[in-house]
Length: 290
Ligand code: P6P
Picture (tube, rainbow, N blue to C red):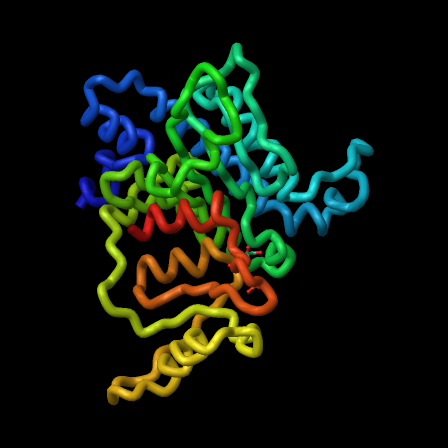
């Protein structure tokens, strides 16, 4: 029984990433170092997100906090945390963040061979009501180390080498793939470690849930409207699907990955090219789903 109580062979994200690295003897461990910096960023943001509500109560998140410093909004803070973590890893050369108008070209002295596209805090409009939010990231290997240009972050999604998200919800869950399966890790705050809780995640082949913002129905094109109608009024005698829509992509995708079904944000009259951003929402989530 004691063995059950104190399991010490826990698989942590650090051990998992190192195991993955050992599958590539030629690897110098650059991706391992990069991922460890991203993991640290996630731990920091998890802590800040969990305190955000309380900070408001204690007046820390007003215009200025007790030290008279202007209290940063969570998405601004998260962006600074990830930019600093990625730059200081010494393994990146160009960064694209949802929070920044322009790409960040890393100082040549600190440059590495990876490009990272990320949304530091996706769904941040949901923060104040405590709905799950998350960080989404996608990683490319630079194609031309000598002249780093924007082209490096405009690579096709199929060239992405790793992607993941960290969901800040009832628990802090990090889902990661470096191209060899998808694994989920849950932060144990008492250890400060992400423990593998969802090994080798595979989306169930069939699902009973559809996830779409029905409020956009007026703007849908006919094929979309017909598809959603079929979810609600199946013509093959199957039971209608359930609608679950959180409005935070990380939470909607995470539920879909674990429970199955479909998450869709179709292009419509209001957003003719769709709403979700290709570089740091669609490509990373597609990488994980695929
Ligand atoms: P809507 C959040 O702002 C976001 O980018 C995604 O996280 C989410 O899936 C989507 O927008 C929600 O959009 O129009 O349904 O509120």
